[in-house]
Image (tube, rainbow, N blue to C red; front, side, top):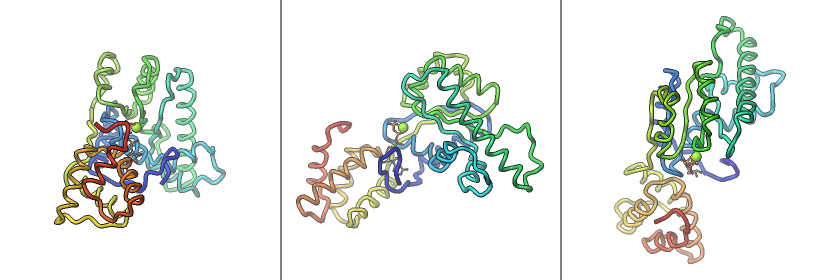
Amino acid sequence: MQHNGRDIGTFIATKEHRRFVEFANAVRKNRYIGLCYGPAGVGKTLSARRYAHWDDVEPYLQEGPHSHPSESEALVTLVKSRTIFYTPTVSETVRDMRKTLCDLIYQAEDSIDNHLNYDENFCEINKHNKDVEMLIFDEAERLSMNTIELIRDIFDRRSIGVLLIGMPGIEKRLSRLPQFYSRVGFAHHYRPLTGDELTFVLTRHWRSLGISLDNADFTDTQAVASIARITGGNFRLLHRLFTQIERIMKINELTLITDEVVDAARSALVIGVT
Ligand SMILES: Nc1ncnc2c1ncn2[C@@H]1O[C@H](COP(=O)(O)OP(=O)(O)OP(=O)(O)O)[C@@H](O)[C@H]1O
Ligand SMILES: [Mg+2]
């Protein structure tokens, strides 16, 4: 799977992802503003894109309305998800954001309406229903006071769920905006992988290198412990560490991930590992 030009392998439905989905559903159902925060690289963006089915829906919205909307799988997905995933650009102006965001919402609602009218089962649909039910903003640190005001305005007018995703500390920053903050109903801490789940993900990495991970093998257990310590269960670090592990194993024609291999891989990583 490709995501913004990066190969991320298969998406793993982790416990954190499930917690995220539950959280997002609660925000959406209660029409609150929700905050999701967590360290860099734990998987927030991927979870949110997945929740919005954005890899399918975004290209559809960008290509514009189709002549036979009910035939498009992406449209059916949009009708179900009713979620817009938005990444503000760096220092985006209110004007730019209003234009891009409103275009997206308009496009989505137009497509959904057409689809529902097209499908006779949905004829009874209440026209006053707001079609888009959820807006997700990634990289919320980039939002200026003014764009936050715009979001509050959209939230008040449309009464839809709004979810802001950022790094820890975003909740403190927003708490300085009392009107916005008073509308925040839920906050959710997105955490790194731990315990069995980390082992599960590591097993997959091991397998992708063509070797199997044996819990009863001391070398394996030791390597797993080292990786857990180095990465802290952070997805992005795991990926980067394994790229190095793979390289080192290939160069040295090794067939086993030992503590030494992990250590060599760690020292090849420049940033992010302490
Ligand atoms: N559920 C998952 N399954 C497989 N890989 C994942 C998963 N979640 C994250 N990753 C991997 O970790 C990388 C980082 O994930 P992501 O970009 O979602 O992190 P983030 O929390 O949004 O980080 P940042 O705060 O820096 O934006 C992804 O590119 C992918 O390689
Ligand atoms: Mg992100």
